[in-house]
Image: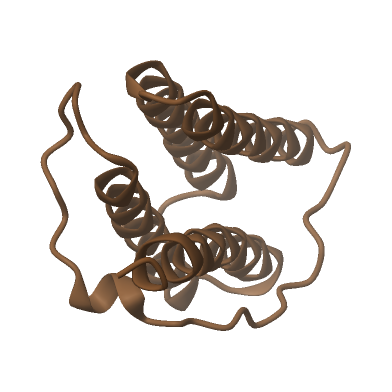
Length: 148
């Protein structure tokens, strides 16, 4: 089954809406102000991705060319916690890393099946998700691994 450019954009817009809600939910569960602000910031970034996609769909914008993002691979070695109301900062970071890794894989897999501008768009989205994952990995490295 082949998806059209607009169907893939609609799918990506929905995925970004879900990511936005996910981070707002994590922010609402946060036990500290700093943790809440981190997740609200990511919710805002996901909303920005959605806005870019909506603009691209309307013919008013484009995502930049995809740049390769470093991967610390921390998420590969950590088990994803079940989201609960009393998650600690470490658990929330691991959950966010896993979510961003899954989004990266999804966009990468879709890009492998696409051509031209659609492929570039999907690769750009994959790299945006990789950037988020890297930020969570750096945060985990600095505030969890260094404390232990």
